[in-house]
Length: 157
Image (cartoon, rainbow, N blue to C red; front, side, top):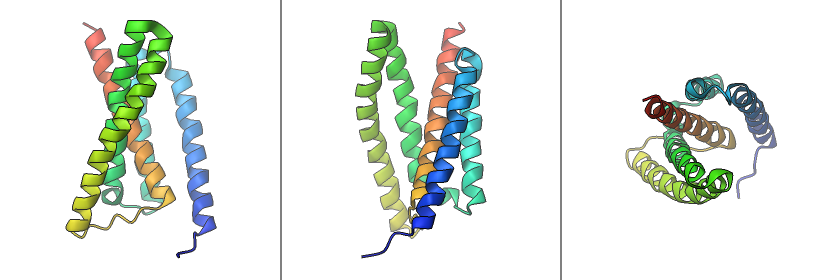
């Protein structure tokens, strides 16, 4: 059995906490600025990718995580908004929870398929706590950001 490197987990946890604080801070600031929150999330997604580069993690290695996060949060935004429109805050919560369950499954299908293809084509995707965490966070930010931009665009008409 391979021993877990505690310092790499601490580095991953530290990176996760810092990025989470930034995400919550930006979200709080932009929460009432409908047209800008989507853009802010996409920019945060790029910040996550920059963090990957700083840790010398190739984007190709976290591609399955990026796709998982994008599908997960991209679809989740629409389901939560729909639930909110149909039944207010409880509808948004239920739509978000039920939607998250389904989108995790959909995202997992694509993530697993991509990971299988990467192994088939000998693309290294050795996951670590840091790469998986930052990859999924970046994907979630991109997915939510793009979905919010679409919703904002539709609601502008």
